[in-house]
Picture (cartoon, rainbow, N blue to C red):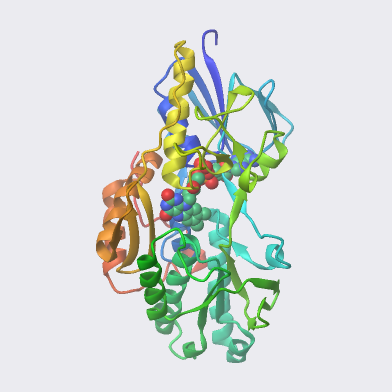
Length: 430
Ligand SMILES: Cc1cc2nc3c(=O)[nH]c(=O)nc-3n(C[C@H](O)[C@H](O)[C@H](O)COP(=O)(O)OP(=O)(O)OC[C@H]3O[C@@H](n4cnc5c(N)ncnc54)[C@H](O)[C@@H]3O)c2cc1C
């Protein structure tokens, strides 16, 4: 259509969806939102899928439903295999090419195994809904097998290792400890659950390093209280099909290792030919475009977005979402012949949930510290905005989360049954 700007967005994560949402109100933009899955996934709650607390559909938001009312946004399911920043255009796995006037890259991250032998083959990362479902399937399978054959426990069938003491690792270890120690004894009353272990390994000497010393101490105490064993200050040397070896020679027999040990830019960044910096992420200018390519934006986890002090902003949902919205604003500025604006991040702080009634948060740019219920409320406030972006029905989600936070641990039979797992427990808004 003459007079319109074709915007092709790769990746429907927090960045891509926020960008498309703002452009949806701009009739002079014709948007194609491409994602290999055809849905947006709410990553902050992946660990709850992995530990059977939520059903996959609870955190999965279909793109065609999300943009059904916006004629200028076309959603397409497709795997982008390469991009040409010069034309610009993208090529999909089916060999088709989608031309653009403006290209927005929001393809996210992938796990970084740091060349740890065996890690890629024998650990399960937690970056997508598919990953989370794999962890959950393996966890339930191991309990079922151990219930049928108790000797397997001595071979590590009920020993679960989490690598990485950042928010993902801490949240996963806390939630695993809960299902292992509080839920499964009711499902398998005759199983010797006392032999079950959850072990968190990190080469650093504490967990949640981005937080204050006080928060480190609190997190360590809460994890231990939940029965998580901590192996800190020691790197993983090797992972095999039946165990993990640490650098100090410790051998841990296990059949499930969750990798939360680090991340780098999505593979597309490495195939883009664009300048990459730390973590393989694409370096961008303050206006979020790639240097030398004023019609190409890179946003969220695939980009190194400069903060006011010149450092790169962290890989967070709120950074990605605000950058998506901001990039759309700059695209509209271009359409209107106005100047683009340098990205300004409104810092919401950092937070992590360790388990029921245990969370830590450092709020705002001045890092006001909160713990327990107050930190949980802060988590809810910040993540409500991310959820609203996806179109979740907030009241239902908040009620569920409050319930999760306060009530004793339990799981419905459906969540522990792979056959009925896809039933949503949380309603979606429109
Ligand atoms: C387990 C976990 C927990 C987290 N918890 C929090 C939290 O509590 N709070 C917080 O603020 N942040 C959290 N984060 C970080 C936050 O989720 C990310 O910073 C955010 O998702 C980045 O958004 P994005 O849009 O850049 O990428 P993503 O959300 O990762 O989206 C990328 C999208 O691109 C698609 N894609 C990738 N490659 C291709 C391709 N070649 N072709 C087509 N599509 C492609 C993917 O399918 C995906 O939908 C967490 C992350 C993880 C992994």
